[in-house]
Image (cartoon, rainbow, N blue to C red):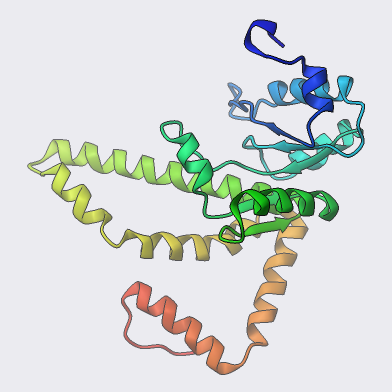
Length: 239
């Protein structure tokens, strides 16, 4: 919007772009709810100047499951894909070009085009996971909540360490070794629990998942149990 900070107007940018990355804050309101005013204002500005029917708006902001569906109903002239970013402020550029996966939520015809864009830029080394809006939103929300939980936990441990004779630097290093095992197993078991609180669609996903697992051959179930048991340090496995 500020001519002094841009080489092109918003109208030029929107109508000459096939893909528009929208990364704006979604801060918390005083009551803890998510403030969507900045995001909705940006979408409104884009919709007012957009003259194309085939460009795609990639929402990168953190939003709760169900939000993008509501935004699509409000901004019907826009093709929206939820494509959350997994970046840190300190190394955002490095994180963007070294992502482990791209999460794409939306209509298949739109997510497929975005997947083609990423594959053109990054090749087939980084998987593009296409889903509906709610699943993509949940992936991002779960990641944020999990990282916040880790920060809170470590802050609590640091306060305890400050009260007694503990070498915090040594304790933190040793505690973090091989922590990837705990992290992936925690995420694995958290997914069904979180989905079960997401309404009928979430519970349906969980039910279908367990039904599919029950239908798998014994060797697969034993193998899965062995992997989980190994991560937990258990020596025995039973179906």
